Length: 92
Image (cartoon, rainbow, N blue to C red; front, side, top):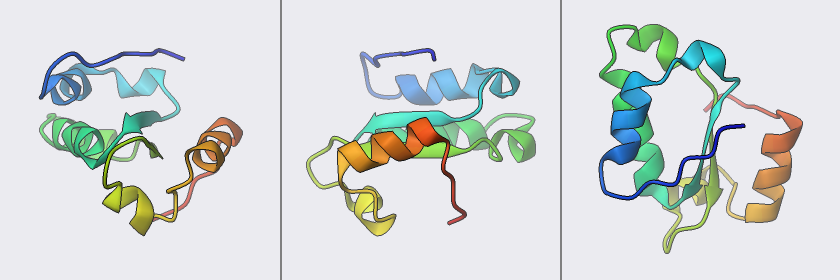
């Protein structure tokens, strides 16, 4: 597990643009919808975006609205964290 706490807007996009996705089983954000949005945009801007976007993504809701987490039925943070730890995935 690598933990990175972002310090400024756009940092998650920068990180996901340069991340060696072959080194990870997935990417999980603990945030509102914006951070996951940054990660997806960063992955899509990569030259290997077709491979990078296949990396499983997760969200543990910690924002004010959590609209995306709600639509994924992942609004309860404890349950979402357990599902991530278990490696549970689903297609969206």
